[in-house]
Image (cartoon, rainbow over all chains, first blue to last red):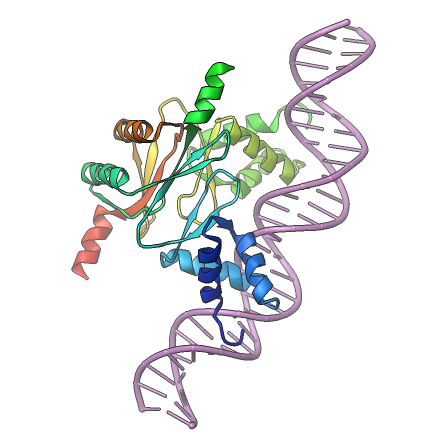
Amino acid sequence: MKKSSVEQLILETLSRENTHLTSLQVYEEIRKQLPAVNSSTVYRALERMSKRGMVSVSDIGTGAEVFEVVKNELHHHLVCQECGRIITIGQEDVRTFFKVIEQINDFEVFTNHLILFGLCSECRKKDNLS
Amino acid sequence: MKKSSVEQLILETLSRENTHLTSLQVYEEIRKQLPAVNSSTVYRALERMSKRGMVSVSDIGTGAEVFEVVKNELHHHLVCQECGRIITIGQEDVRTFFKVIEQINDFEVFTNHLILFGLCSECRKKDNLS
DNA sequence: TTTGCAATTGCAAAAATTTGCATTATAAAA
DNA sequence: TTTTATAATGCAAATTTTTGCAATTGCAAA
């Protein structure tokens, strides 16, 4: 590793792609720019970064965990289990729910990237027809 | 595989342990009773079972996904990121939140095993002192 | 600048997981 | 019961991820 740290490259990659990537996908993207990079370096950097809250890790139902850059405005996702569609939702309503949970359980919620699974409206229509 | 199906053994194992196990832990438990079983058989059975909703898969912040039997009364967890403590919470408040999300987004939520990360009351006290 | 320390990286080996394909088991239909 | 089709399993190889350890790097104090 000469100049650039892998962390920087990971941030650039995730920002550029602006979507969820698996650790392997991140590794392969980084390797395009830095062919000699070692896989363990990338995997370890991803782990560090998620611990520090720089990236979020989540299971969107694809079998493997995916990573995403954490930006200023937090967001959450609804994932349709039938068509795979991903709906992004904002903080407000989720935050209200978190507050309730916090009060009831005397617990401070940090979760910054919630994933809920279910059926989107279109797939629900289709299912009703059949 | 002669008599018993691996699925049945997995259910028994998860019920007996009554906790979250990683796929590797499940495989090793099964192997105690069925030494010749192949790892791919166990991994594939776990995948099938989670698709069918027989077991839940979740990331409780330990790095690896964990499996749990799905029983009648659904439950969710709060995981303390400092001490690892796991608090189990019921459906009611969560269900109310899901209803709100469903109405706003015209989406039907299926998620049956929600995990929220944060700080438990005791760790919050400790942190305040230091 | 030089020194020292902690964090990051590479490397090689091990471990965990997935995959394609052939075989076997299970259950429904004939 | 026999036949047939589908699902589950085993096996071997490939792929992905993790680990221990030594070397390198970056940063801050001297």
